[in-house]
Length: 239
Image (cartoon, rainbow, N blue to C red):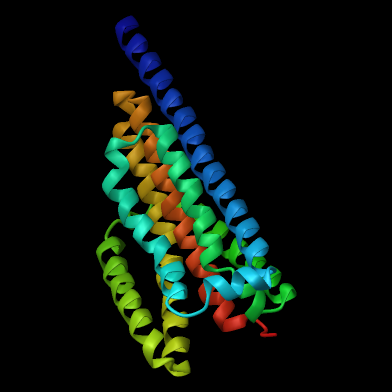
């Protein structure tokens, strides 16, 4: 009996340690994401309110470089993550966040400041609710992954095609479908980040956990920023 109590106590202590580690891990994920969002906003505001920089960055072929540079960085990040240290991965993420701000800086020219703030608040509330649900739900939503990724690929292809077609009807459809896809991805990614930590926590690899938190922050950051941009297309008031 004494041996059983010892095992149970040890098991309970280990479970409490993992729970505490999970909270710290998720706090780092959300904290890193929040810093990235701040850098994005500051870069977007600074460039969007500078007419000279806007003329340079969004005229001619340069605008395509600015538009696609963040996407290239995301793929580069995925390819380089195993060779980066946790600190290097974090620096890369912050650089990406600033570049994303430059890429979306045009919103301060196209939309009113009030509608940008309003849609940002709507996105923040929706994101928080979806992420909390993904974290707390007992339902296994891992099966959503392949469906959502397929939808995301289709969304990217349609968005690229519509750059040349410039169809408002297609843009509206992309925005509506895109909001649903990124809403699902927010819940899915949150649960996946949590489950990934629980699966690897027992190994105690601090370097891996550090980089995992950065990758988790990137995933949720992309969910948020894409949902915000799509909602802005639907709800934003234009200048």
